[in-house]
Structures are given as C-alpha cells and as structure tokens.
Length: 341
Image 1 (cartoon, rainbow, N blue to C red):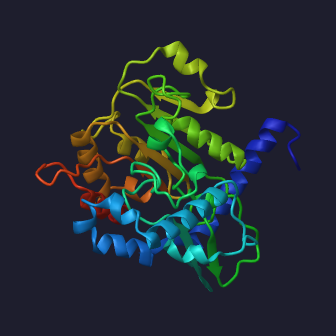
Image 2 (image 1 turned 120 degrees about the horizontal axis):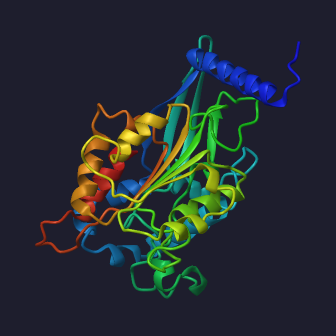
C-alpha cells in the first residue's frame, strides 16, 4: 500500500534510494588508484630547481607557447560542457595529467582514468603574470585583475574527460561515480569567502560565486555551501547578495579558521558533515601563509579523515622568487600539489 501523503512518500522514496546506494557501496566501490603526471608536467617538475627562477622565459619558448595555447583553448572549451563519452579526444589531451580509479565488485572490476590540468609554470593560468608573447593571439590575454585572478586553467571534474574500462552501459552524468553516489550530498566550502559577489569591491576576485555560476550552468546544485571569512562583513549585505536558490543552504561563518581542532577548524567541519560518497569541493585562500601551511600539514597527515573526503581542492599558495628569501619557493608548491593529487 502506498501512503498518499506526499511528504511521507517523498521521504520513504529518498530513504529507499539511500539504502539501495549504501547496499551497493558495500559490494562495489570506487577507489583512487594512482596519479600519473603528463610528460609536460614531468618536464617542469624535473627541472623546477632551475625553472622556478626563470618561469616566464621558459614559458616563452616556442614549444611551450604552442602547448600552452592548445591546452588553454582545450580547457576553456571543456569548461563550457559537462563531459560525456561522445566528446572526442584531441591530440592535446596527452599533455594533461591523469588520475586513475578502480572499482572492485564481488564479480567484476572496472578501471577509470580522468584528465586533470598539468602542474606547469606558476601553477596557474600560464598566459598571466608574465609579459605578453608576440606569437600568442592577443584575444587570449586577459587584462588587469581578471588576469591576476584568472581561473581559466582549472579543469573541474564535471567537465573533465574520462574513460572507463570495461565500458559501463549505464549513463554517467553529471558527476563521475568515483566523485559522487546517488542520494549523497554535494558540498562547497569556501575558506576566505568575503562577500558572495566581490572581495573588497573587486568582482574579479570571487570564489563562491564563480563556483556557483559554473555548477549552476551544468545543472549541478550544491546541497550545502559553507563560507568562512575572517574580515568583519556587513551581515545584511552578506545575506542580501545571495541568489534566492542559495539562501536556504548557505552557512556563513564570519570568523577566521583556526589551526586548533574544534568548531573553527575547517577539516573538523568537513569530517563532521561529509561522507565518502559525497562530492566535496574546497577553496582555500586566506592570505595568511603560516596558518595556511599549518592547516595544509594537518590535511596531508595520513590520519586525517578530511583528506579522503575532499574531491576537488583549490588553494592559492604564496611563494617567493627571491633566491635569498626563506619563504617557500615554487618548488615547494610543486611538491605540495603533487602530494595533494
């Protein structure tokens, strides 16, 4: 007998779907297998002791310029789509690094590979931060703050090409099964959020809204958004800037994150609200290098549960190109981001 009460029926349906998903998870689960850097990334990593002091001149070499243009155009195209298996591969795809996953079931095994942007140059948009190159089309260059804050070289998972072998007959969209399970949550945490629409009046320097716009365009809706901000904001403005569809599931914490384990430690929060089946995206940029380093050390600890719950992590690490400075160098960023992958 079906209960005709809509709320009861909806709750029962959701619960049954979740139970089915949990039952399947016990017998079939996707696990990270390994990370394979592309030849382009390996070239940079292998020579980073030298390249970190001559990034711009290295990027200006003809072979680097050609790869950069093709890779950037490829990412910008992919980011307008949700990847499906009918999108054909391109020669430039071999310059992207690869993340491998494996699904082990009671009677079969599947292997998957998904592309990710390579770690090259300053580990950001390679056509920013350096002098313009005459052989690069002028329309590929951004100006001012939009160049400094460019996110064009980030290949987010919903847009990233992947392959599964043996072939899975069922459709996979919009999130790959190693990122998200049916009935689970999609969570965005913005650490250093400022206002939704701008930061200190700078609309180029946005975090939450950029992610919101990207995912909404792909018909992906977050179930929860958590925003931390140390700088005191106008409470009413902070809430009024939110789109109507964000307001119900937005949590604004106008307190800076802390290293100590507790309610203001972001990893403690993630461990409290997220499950392995959830899709968790984190942006981390608080412009406090000592605290950032301490929190990153926590996240990379083998005993950290949070590191296994985060699917996509975006972090602006501060480095120095002064050989005599004791601050971290670009080489440290390459080592850190390789560990994160």
